[in-house]
Image (cartoon, rainbow, N blue to C red; front, side, top):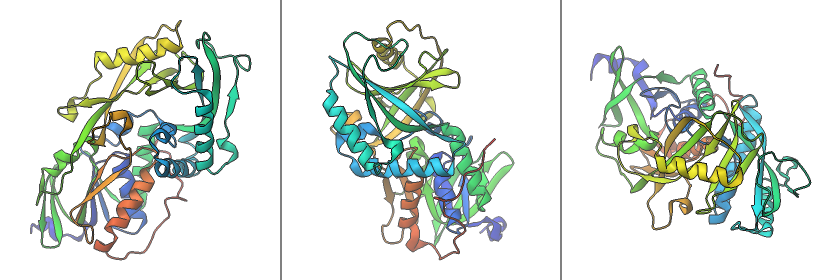
Length: 396
């Protein structure tokens, strides 16, 4: 062992690879539980998929279509927690679903779905929804021809990258060690610890950890190839999601739109003085570092926009493409499970755990699942904090 590894400051209970929302969440939860933690990110906090989402903190209304009641209930619970512990980052927002004669779902079906959504949220006042007619309110630019009704319901929004940075800052305040930028070169299992080599701007850092947590998102397999012995690697797909930023706030409200071509949900909402439109779901093959918005994705999204806002003249100022990790399956991408999958080298006393998938809203719940799985392989420590009550700092 090198002299650096003999230094107790380089020994950790847990090393977390990946500084997106899930890596940040695991590091925060582990540090709150009293463990020594090293959080490693190769470029910048939240630089990958965690900064290219729809900026929503929500239960996932569309997941009711696939019967994912547990996931929706968990997400709605987490939504309320985040509204409480991050009021400066997570804000309630009102969303609107226009229904037309040609829409796939009838008003009564959406009414039942929104009722179930409200029920899973606990029938709270903030979760109430309403049905509006064309004469109830003014919706500038929204197509009126064929309009049957419009539903209004509540969810929440955030700045995904700032939320990730706030969770990282919280982890650091609880004692986690941050390494960014830092690249994992290798991790070797030697007796009962991982010996880890990182490349940082100032040179090589070496450390040891009892457990290695792979939170690299689309790069989860790339990280796995640096690990010896090779950990289990399930079959999965990378699915590209694109958002467009439009030059002006075409709409002053948040909309949940049904794509006329395939029935997918597309969100359209004001964003930092402009408009945000997304997302797509396109199978991706290649290097995750090279993900880019395709002309077909841009045409698809603008087509949805023009279907509902026919007089809009959108000018695209920014294109954001991120990658989701989804289980392989025979069903269409839109219908695949969004449940997080945890892969471990042992279910009884794991030394390696990888996160496949997961949602921005549920990062805390995912972190709690990781720690429960890892509990048998970790020493008992004195708990420092409860992340459900710990107010997140302002990342600025």
